[in-house]
Image (cartoon, rainbow, N blue to C red):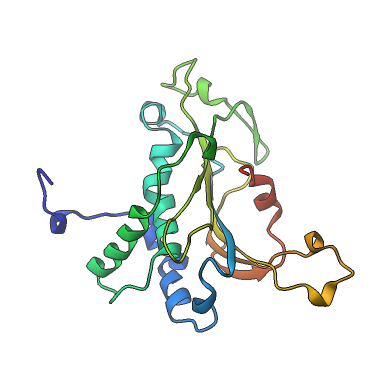
Length: 233
């Protein structure tokens, strides 16, 4: 570091103040049911969604140089991802937790172009109200190519997560406000269902709702908006 030492840097993200996020480590590391299966042997993939119904509001100048990728992914989305993927820390002090989060980020290879999708909202209706296209917002260039939606596939090359894709997506002026972590578990052996096609069996999901309805739920079906959001192979 040219200017500051590591212990002088404070990494602050308001997502970490949400009750559901703060309890992720307790759910994982203090739970004899989940911890043994929290790995590539039992988890098929993870989806992290941060959908907003608001547009850029009056932040056109900010968004023109930032976009959804810089605005949401390096801080909010990766904060959630590292909480889900980190190894157990030696303690719950800031340095120990930061160290394990840093290990996750260090194990993530660069995203390839075919693992990312960018988009921009147009004019339409959100929650029953007419909304402008992004290019019609104040302080936005009429030919702007800045993304207001981004979806990406991350990989984590370590023993716990090798081969498990992490799908993330975030966007503005979406049809529903929804921030959640959806964990899809692999199907159980289907020998008892020999007369049923295996692709008809639903996987089990553990959904951690961050907002607006905080809480956890287990289900064999992802929410309707979650199914519509799946856009990556």
